[in-house]
Image (cartoon, rainbow, N blue to C red; front, side, top):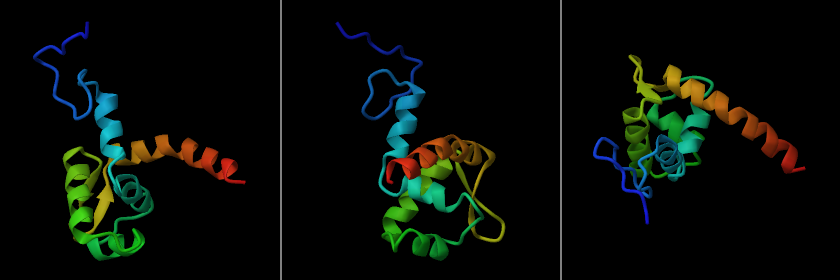
Amino acid sequence: MAKQADSKTHSVRGSRTGRPIMALLDLLGRRWSLRILWELRGEPLTSRALRTACDEASPTVLQARLTELREAGFVELGESGGYGLTPLGRDLCEMVMPLHRFAERWKR
């Protein structure tokens, strides 16, 4: 019998448990989410520059992902109008770097 999540647990798409890891993996698994974070790891980018860096991703999808990543606290809109990583977003990118290094070794 499946254990029911208590009433204090937030609903997470694709998860009955509401566990934060499931919410994070769901967000990062959405099209362009990881790519956006990856492209912002160096410096803030305008919407246009980010779209170019993301191989001309659809502006609608790109804006939807930016909104989701902003709501999650990973991306912020700077005073100059460019998008950049928040401290939490930079922490997340640091967590992804070992996976990046592994992928570089794996592709050989």
